[in-house]
Image (tube, rainbow, N blue to C red):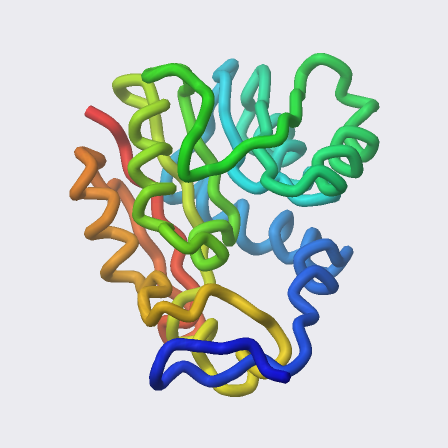
Length: 210
């Protein structure tokens, strides 16, 4: 039986989402293509304390936060227990420079103004209430802190070929380049850079807290 979807959203027949999310190819794309764009748009976070939303099983984004963006410490929040354990194991060599905990990106445990940067690598389109994720990212940022986001947008996520093999929330409100920017502005962030690729199927955005 296909997953039930909202009217006008194609159904999902076989959910292979995790195969891509945790793949080596996905990690390579993140490292060689997406991170350099975000770095160019928002700059590094030298010596900073940062948070990654949805760290996954490989912890690629946490490594990038340290190695590419220059952070001194990176915390990760991951919804699924098995992914938390796998990520911790994958990052053991980094010692106490990283910490991965179970948590919900729509209701972060961190206090207001805790971080110099928040990273969201393809997290928003998986969240039922992705606008709340943006709001929580803004809340935990210090003044001057930056929100780094890269996303596959509704144009791709809601396409019939992808929907057939990858399940995502189907409420008709998957992110677009315009709505990601609008959501950031609505919670007091200033967009300092945005770049769209693949005919609008991918967007990278950096927004700063004043």
